[in-house]
Length: 207
Image 1 (cartoon, rainbow, N blue to C red):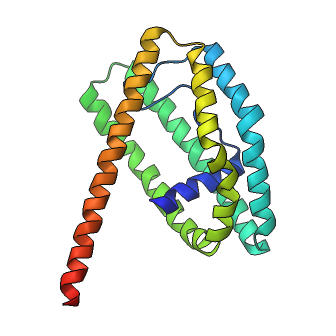
Image 2 (tube, rainbow, N blue to C red):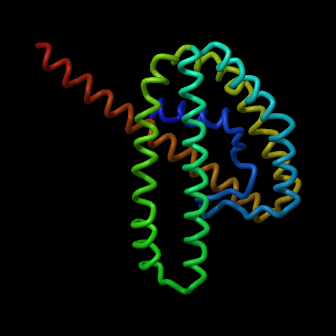
């Protein structure tokens, strides 16, 4: 999972992708942002986050071999094509929703249409693994500026949102944050238990 996250970060640096600059998705508590809120977030990302990301990516490129630079450029093209394909698919599904399809029909159609794209994404991630492995130390170093600023950026984005959200929307966001925190704790606890079981099995095998 950690390597997958690194792949996403590396590709996002190269593509200039700005996370969460538009509306929040994927959770029932996420408020729909108005144009002013989206514009403020976009401005913050463009002026504050993107320059740091761009500099980090430039430093990473400068330390890569020529072969790896060529490989990464090729993968950026592939990632951009996948991103566009995903965007087109979402637009198509949006049109189908508006056509009056039932939830069950939509679920089956989504599953069928997104399956090939999912396979492409898996293959893409697999193709990146050797690159990520041989450049692990360089990537880790280039990510440091983002890690150092993550909490500050998060606080500033929340402050920007607070200017545009109603009291009800703020309450929903707090509920969302609480739920994410709880899910994170549950996930870490499960990982700890799996690790303990794994260590236990290794211990028994050593006897």
